Length: 415
Ligand code: AMP
Image (cartoon, protein in one colour):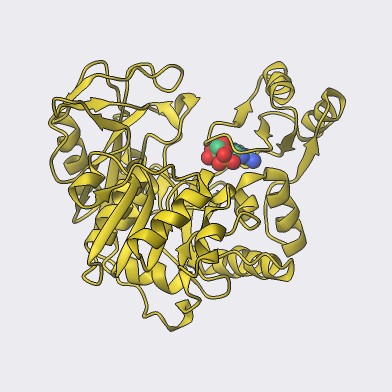
């Protein structure tokens, strides 16, 4: 199989490693890729958000599958353009990607499908926003209606700050606060059949102990030793299948990766958000544990043959990834610093580029994801931090508590 992978972050480096490791893949091409991906794929300098350019590249290279990593190409209609050429694409249509592209649309689908989620109002003016904030009370949750690269959500006890965020965004979803540990569940689907991957947890806040501003994600681990028995089956039954059925009923079936972000509350799992693609950095840990060949799985989802795909197999043990971020991230990340010690197995490239002289430079907020597996969560965590210790990047920072609460049995479900 020949595969074209779109994107150039840590998620895509993890996908590239999975795809290149599938014995059925004879050639892997990535656009635009990054220096880490370059070690397993041929890079092409094509804009992944340009539907015509991507479709032309897919035709030119004669690929059998296009795997779309980030959300922006999906919302731009890249999957539609590739499919219009008769080439299977892993990723939803632009219409179906609205599950991620619009928080209000996602709420509408969840309500119609009877999916358990936070009560919410869509607000476009200060008066209705204030009314919604006061109905739910603190902590206040205000979400930008549009795509905001994981940074459009404000959770705060400060009512004025909540109102300010709403005013800056224009159209927002105000919702009730869901208390409980969070779970990311990835589901591979062809629109009808659906296969869950291992549940994972990520760390959104920049600082240890979940302090400081939200980020794209500072680390992750899988699986979740504290997850209630039957959690995945319950989410498939109460969330995933009703949502897929509702999307199909609307004439916009969702095929690709449905990312279900959940809070495990006293009343059971509640959906915080849907995304239309693999999450970053959870992908790094989930794929590190997946034994089933990745390209075959994604090809089955892209061709409507997932029901006939064999059950997934997983490595024993656990995986942990720790994000090494640039100085100033998330507010004002500095780029262009030299990185050393990063070109070793397990260090996934998220925001790097190659200088003319061959040196590796930082080129984004989240620069590297030190990713390791181990016999158990503690061993995986220690191995991931050993990788972090080998990296040198001036001014960089990382959380020191990734997976610690789970290792120490400190995660509890309310109620
Ligand atoms: P989202 O972009 O919707 O995933 O939101 C980003 C983060 O904000 C989530 O991972 C949660 O930590 C937090 N969040 C979003 N919605 C809620 C909610 N209703 N209750 C509590 N926390 C939330």
